[in-house]
Every structure is written in C-alpha cells, then in structure tokens.
View 1 (cartoon, rainbow, N blue to C red):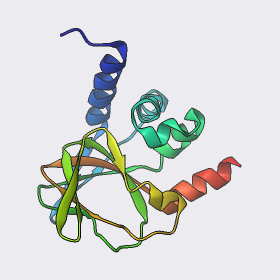
View 2 (view 1 turned 180 degrees about the vertical axis):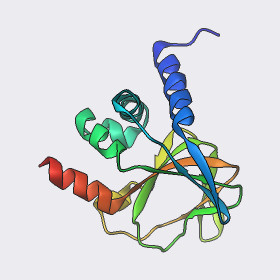
View 3 (view 1 turned 30 degrees about the vertical axis):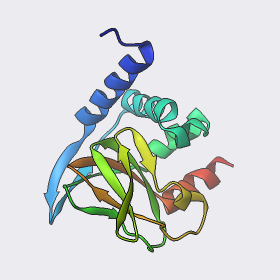
Length: 156
C-alpha cells in the first residue's frame, strides 16, 4: 500500500510520541511521563495540530505551549477514564487503543486512537454526560483544565 504524506507523517509522529513515553507502574494503572526537547515538542505539536480536530482550531504556537502541560497515562482494559456526572476537569487525546462511550449504563459509541474526548471541559463548566471506559490497554495524553486556562491566559 502506498501511504500519503499525511499518513506517513502521522505514523512517524505516533512512533516518536511512543518513543518518548516512559512507563512507571502505580497502583492499578501506569503513570507515563515523557521528557521533551524542542524537536520532540515541535513534533508532538504538529501531530496534535494536524490530526486532532480540537487542536487544529488552535494556533500552532499555542498548541506548542500546551504540549508542556500534557500528562500521559496508560489505562488497562475495563478501567474508567471519565465518569458520567463528574465535573469536567480534563480532556484526553487517545494515542493508542479504543474506548467505549457509555451513557446511563449503555454503550453509545466507540472512540479509536488519534481522537480527543472531554474537550468541552476545557472551556465550559459542565458535568460529564457519559463515562469513558478503556476497551483495551490505552495510552492517553491528559490536559487538565487549570493548565489549559493558565497557558491561554499567559498567551493573551
């Protein structure tokens, strides 16, 4: 199969992000952190800006500033990432894996890797309208609302 330049960039970006992840075992899940230099930060920023719809609407320079605020985490199959009814305090970018969106105990959708969810929490004070459950082992980047607000307000 011949890949388009966009697909090649995406595969390369995902590979580089995965190389940056360092896994440390904690309780029932894993905490993941990455150390980045300017080249790695630019790679991650471009990946988010090109392939995650929420970030494609934000200036690339601002996305680059947000990259420093991401925390990475691994969720195992069956773990709840977001609980329905909780106040939204963070958004997620699903790098690897698949999750179920469950409202009132019923699965209403599935989300695949290279997608974002929970982004309404960054701009609005809203309760979660669904739970997000890992269908398999998932690698997720998390951006907390307070970090988003800090970066946005610093950029004004």
